[in-house]
Length: 331
Image (cartoon, rainbow, N blue to C red):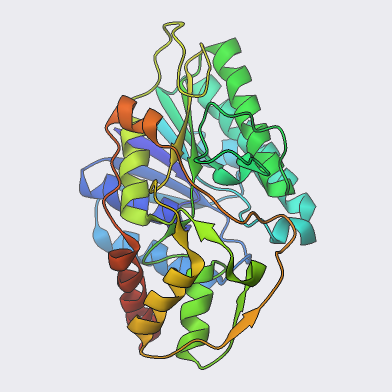
C-alpha cells in the first residue's frame, strides 16, 4: 500500500510515517517546512525518516498551492491519504488569520479534490478538539453541536469537516476526520506547553500559567494518537447509508481521539519539575483569547468502531518527552 501523508515533517505526520514504514508501507510525504516553528526540528525529523530506510519519498511542496501540488504528484500513484498538514495553533490564528484560511481551507479543498479525482480508498484528515469551542457539556462527544468556535483556527477545522461531508455526499469519497486532543510526546512541537515549560524550567526561566492554573487538558500521548490514525486508515467508512460516528449517512466518519482522562495543568507541571529536578517559577496569567479552560474527549465512538484504547498515562508520557528533550538538546 502507498500512502500520501501531508505534514510529513510535523509532529504527528512524522510519527505516523515512522509506523507506516516499519510495517512495510510505501510513503509519499509532503511538507512546505514553513517557519511557524524552528525548521531545523522539521528537517531533523525528515532526516530520521530517511535513516529508517523503507520506501519514503519526500516533496517540499505547499499543498495550499493546487498547481504545485498537482505538479509534484502528477506521476505518483497512491492508494490512501493521511492529511495532517495545517497551520496549527489557536493563539497564532489571532495574529496571522490569513495563514489559516490559506492552509486550512484552500489546502483542505486541494486534498479533497486530489482524493476525489484519484479515487482514493480512504482519506484520514486532522480536525481538532478546538471545534467544541464554548461547549459546556463534558465529556465532548461527536454527537454534540459544534456551532460556536471561539478561535479562527477552530472555525477552519469546522469548515474542513463541512467540506468533507459535502465531498462524501457528492462523490462518495471515503473520509474520516479526527478531532485530536492535546497531543504530546517525543519529537513534539516547541509552541506547545509541555515543550515550553520543560525548556524554561531547565533554563531557570519563569513559565506563563494561563487562567491562573485553572486548566484541564485531555493529554494524549503520540503513540496512542498514531494507533488511532492507523486504525482509521485501515478501516474506511462504508458507503452503506448507515449513520456513521458524527451523524453522516455518507462515507464520512468523525471521531474524537483523546486519552479520555483530563488532567490538571498543575499535575503536568509537577511531573516536569520532578523530571528536571527543578522547581518552576510561575507567572500566573489570565485566560488567553481563543483558549478554553478544559478539554475532555468522549472516545466511545472510536473505541466501539475501531477498538481504540489509549494506554499511556502522563506519568509515563511526560518523562518520555523530557528524556527525549534532554537527549535532543544534548543536556
